[in-house]
Picture 1 (spheres, rainbow, N blue to C red):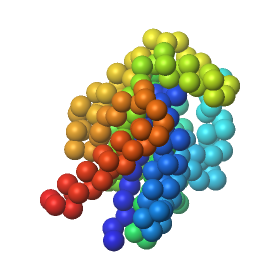
Picture 2: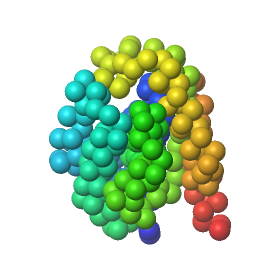
Picture 3: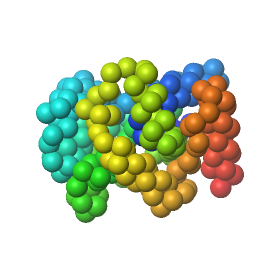
Picture 4: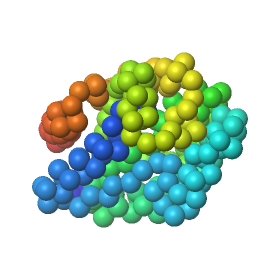
Length: 210
């Protein structure tokens, strides 16, 4: 069996981490080996970059410099965690990947040309088999995030910035419908998990039939 690479994307409070864990459990219940990981981070070196970036100092860097650091973390994550797991035929589920860099650092001023170059350097030809974009109005997402925990430096941004990021994720999904599925994340956690599983199975069936 070839490996399967699924990523979760979307704004703050959309439930990406929770749903990534639930999807991993579903696959494990089917007898598959799953690597559940996240970005920024996912490998020891990348986690060090994460610790620096998710601070006020990291947030204050220009968008281009943020994107470079995210790409450096991603390159290590891909080389040491994601590619080996896929080569072994495992399912890899990642909470955020390169779409988040486009949405977040693109909104912070990094140009599309720069983003494309950094993506090529960090991941090469690696593309997720399926990206689940959990869509939620920023107002509701931030309300959830505040109830869940203290906000990190990026979560504390102005509402207009969060709206721009949401628009960016939706543009990515519209641009790449073969890879991306937009899912309304405003409902109940359990119902959302069922919807995600249904969409994943639907896409896998389509891929198997092609």
